[in-house]
Structure formats: structure tokens, C-alpha cells
Image 1 (cartoon, rainbow, N blue to C red):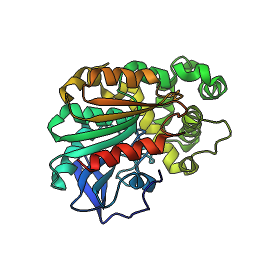
Image 2 (image 1 turned 135 degrees about the vertical axis):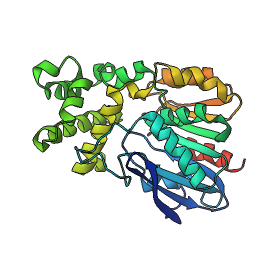
Image 3 (image 1 turned 90 degrees about the horizontal axis):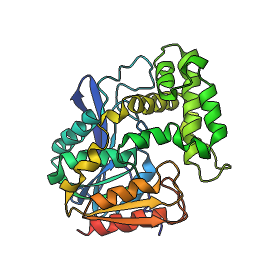
Image 4 (image 1 turned 180 degrees about the vertical axis):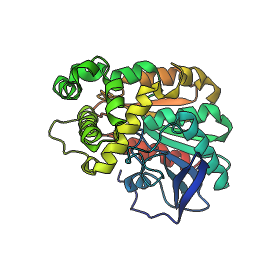
Length: 316
């Protein structure tokens, strides 16, 4: 299956959500179509035009949101003096609710991967009556063990990249890589936070690649993106995603028979298969689709599985 043709937004804007934050949103597709919310990953990735193409533009009304501090939302975390204290999971969930009401949407389909799957779940368990269905991939659920895995455990598969990341810290900070990078990325001096952001983004790029020869994600070529992405990821990791350990997974049964498709690459080293299995066991309405040759949201069969799931929910 091929993605749908490129489309452009028919409406967009910035919504003042308080705390000095203006969150960017856009809407594509059919104004009378089934509403869907794109919950991007990261934290701090922002939305990209390519994701619009997973949705049938004749049947979906697709809402894309750049979460606080990234993409086109303001202020931007690429400015190292921007305060991140009002950037938490609870704030992001509340922003989605404000945007839903602003656009006069009753219920919507959720679509998210990686961090976007955790944030989708956090929204869904807090507002189950607003969720029609969910399509989630590269599954994470916000357990603290999942944070520890990305920030250290997965190093057993990428020892060279881990050594580069760890040795980029002063010796006194190497015992806690997240805390060390949180300190460096909070430094307003570009000579400190700039190289730290580069090293963190190199690590992120290494652990999601299916092949060592894969080209660098082009977004990482933008210094402003690198700083914002690294700051936001480390900010959330440092604060354990602003979630109690296992709280989202414990609340998932509230979704009951709400349909969900969980698409997981067997070869995903960043978000291991165990995450998806635990979520599937806790969610009665979920279906687990395992792709043997796929990795972290990419690889053989991934696009086909996403398109098939979204097409199914477009038809109700």
C-alpha cells in the first residue's frame, strides 16, 4: 500500500493555552470527515508533512499539533533560556483538550508512535469518553524502566554510541547520563549546550536506525531543532516523564472495548516488544500487530499496517 497523496492544511493557527505558551495546530483533509489527532513523538519532534499522508483525505479530518516548545509552537525550546517548567505530560494532555474544544470536536481517533504512544495513552485514560479508537506504534507506556532502557539499557546493543555519549560528559557527571545532560543542556552558553545537544541527537539517531549506513535524520541538521529536541527529551527523562511508575498502564483497563491497533516491530530495540505485549494484555479492546522485520516505527510492513488500521477506523 502507498501513502495517500500530499495534502496541505485548510486551517491552522496558534492557540493560547496559558503559561505564556502558544500551541500550533493545523487541520487537513475533509472538514466533515472523521476527526483524528496526530500525537507526535520525541518529546520535541514536532509534526511533519509526511504523517498527513497516512490518512484518507476524503474520510478524515486530521488535526496535527506541535507540542509545547517544539515545531511551530511558541516559545521554542531551541532557545536555551526558554523555561520548561510549564512543559509536562499533564500540560500536553490539557492542551489537546483545549484544541479539541476549540475545533468543536466531540470524539477523535488517536494516532501516535514512541513517545506519541505514551502521550496518546495518557490522554486516553484521562478522557476515555473522547476517544473513538487509537492506532499506536513503536509502543511505550511511560514505565520508568522504559526510560532507563533508552537512557542506558539499550547501550548493550550500541556500545560505541553509548561511549561517545557518556564520555562527552565531565567525569563527575558520567554516573548519571540523564542528569549530566540535563545540566549541560540547561546551560545558556552555546559552547556548552550546543555540543551536548549534538551528542544526544547522535545517540537518538543511532538507537533507532535499522542499519548503520542509514542517513542521518535530516531534522538533526538544523541546530535549532537539535537543541530543542535534546532539551525536551532530557527534560522529560530527567523528570521520569512526569508520570508515576506504571500509572498509565494501570489505568488502561478504563478503555475497555475502545478499539486500538498496536503496531510493533519485532526488531525495535528502542521500544522493545515487551512494552506492546504488556499494553495489549491490559487493554481488552486492543489488537497487537507484530511485524517481524520492522524496527522503531519503520521497516518492512510498517506503512501497510498503519494505513490498514487507519482505513478501518475511517469507515467507523
